[in-house]
Amino acid sequence: MRARICIPILLLALPAFVCGQTPANPTPKMPPKKTTAAEIQKSAIIIDTHADTPQRFVDEHFNLGDPLNGGNLNLDSIHKGNLGAEFFSIWVEPGLYKGQYARRTLELIDSVKQQVAKYPDQIMFVATPEGIEYAHRTHKFAALMGIEGGHSIENSLALLRQYYALGVRYMTLTWSNSNDWADSSGDVDDKSVPHTKEGLTEFGKDVVYEMNRLGMMVDISHVSDRTFYRTLVITRAPVIASHSGARALCNAPRNMTDDMLRAVANSGGPNSKGGVVQVNFFSGFVSQAYWDAMKAQAPEREKAVADAKEKAKTEGREFTYADEEKIQRSYMDRIPRPPLSMLIDHIDHIAKVAGVDHVGLGSDFDGVSGQLPEGLDSPTDLPKITIALSERGYSAADIQKILGGNLLRVFREVEAVSKELQAEERPRISEKQPFDKPQK
Ligand SMILES: [Zn+2]
Image (cartoon, rainbow, N blue to C red; front, side, top):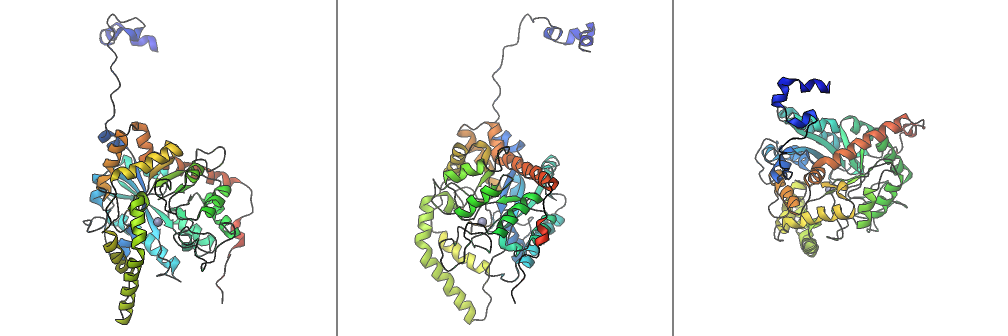
C-alpha cells in the first residue's frame, strides 16, 4: 500500500522523504513547544476526592447552582476552575446522629443525587473511572461519592454492600471517632474510648476484604497509625488517602509520615502500581504555624462552644452542627492563612518521597470552616496549583497525573482487583451476617 502513495500526482504535494528520498533542504528542527499551564489546566481531567458540600445540601438546602455564600463549591466555580469530578463526602456526625447513622447516610447520598437531578445538563452521576472520562468528554461535571467514617455501616457488611450499590466508591475506615472495628487518629490517645488490639478487629479485616471484593476504594485518611499499617498488610488493592498531607511538613496526626507515604505508594501487593495520597487543603494540615495557633486557641474555642450549647439548652433551642461551625470559624478566622506555596510544598514533598505517581488533590472544600491557604477559596482557584507546579518544573504529563490521572489509575486497579477476587472460590463473608445484632 505504501508504494501507492508515491503516484506522480501526490509527489507534487508530498515532501520528498515520504518516498524514501533525502530532502534537499530539511526543515530545521524546532524545539518542542512547551505546554503552558493554561493548556494543561484546560485539557486535564481534574479530580478532587473530598468535599463536604452534602452537609450544605441537606442542612442548608443549598443547591450547586447557588452563589457560594460562604461555602467553597458551586457550579460556577466548578466550571471556572475546570473541575472534572468531585467525590462528595457522605459524612455522618457521630454525636448528633447517634442511633440514626444509616438514615443520615442515606439522606446525604440522596442529597447528591438530588443535585444531579436538578442540573442534568451540567452534572452527571458516575461511579466508574470510565464514567469520569465520559463526563469529561461530554463537558459535564462528574459527581461521585465516598463515605467518611466506617460507623456509617453500623457493623453491617450488608449496609456496606448496599452503599456500594448506591454508588459509593470509597470509604474512610474511620472519621475522627474510632468505631467498633477500627481506630481513629482523632481519639486513639483517649483512654475513655475503647480501641481495638491491633488496629482492626476480625470484623474490620472482613470490611477491608469486602471493600476490595466490591471494588470500593479503601481510604485510610483519619485512621490511627496502627490501623493504617494493619490495613496495608491485609488489603489486596492499592489504598487511597482521600484528604491527608505530609507530617514532615505539618506534624498533625491526620497527616502521614514519610514511611506511611511510601507505604501507600507500595500498597496493593507486588503487581500493583500503588495507591495515592490526595493532599488536604486545610490550613491546619498545611502549615505547622497554623496548626500550633489552632491548638493554642483550643481551650478558649471549646469553652465558647460549650457555653453556646448550654445557652441553647436553657433556652430550649436545638444546637446544630452549623451553630458550632460558626463559633469555630469565628475563632479560626483570627489565625493568618498560610500562603498557597505551602500547599504546593506538600504536593512536592509527597511526589519526592512517594513518587509523582502517588499524589493528588483532596481539597476538603466545605469541610474546614473556610480555613484554606491564601487565594484558594473554591475550584475557581485550582489553576493556581497548576501554575505553581509548572513553575516548579513539573512536566505537563506529571501535572496531569497529580490533577487526576493518578486517582483514575488507582480507581481502575481497584476495579480490576475486585474482578479477580470475585472470581476466587472463597467462602462468602456474607454468610457470617448479621455480624452484630443490636444488644437488648
Ligand atoms: Zn475528613
